[in-house]
Length: 153
Image 1 (cartoon, rainbow, N blue to C red):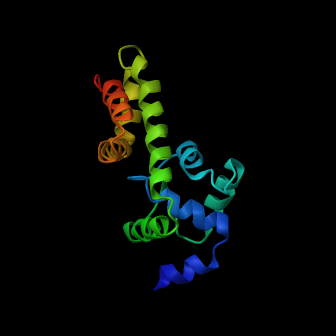
Image 2 (tube, helix red, strand yellow; image 1 turned 135 degrees about the horizontal axis):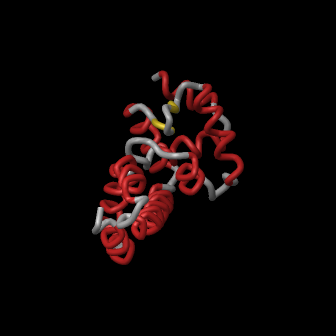
């Protein structure tokens, strides 16, 4: 398979970032990629470098967010499970998007409302994925925080 060949050409940090990016639904920002992909052998500063390599390898697209084709995301999720990182990475994803929603919440009733609503719209798939994981994992505190932060949304 072509993805296997491309995978074999990647550095270890690029492999880690690619498999961890796969937990994002509908892409992510650089900030989200750094928050979710860094750790466990990948420094925060290495994430951007790895993303550049992955874009150059045509495994990650930018326009304007970092996105994976469905086939690459599925492959990445398989590699994530094989690496035994799925739960840890999904927890980082959950923490990031819970904090994202909580940061947006105070601005949903003011002059910045439109901007915050647009940002939440862009991240809606990731917010749903985070909530789904929280419910599946029994992370009720995070699920409740995430729902409460989005109540006005």
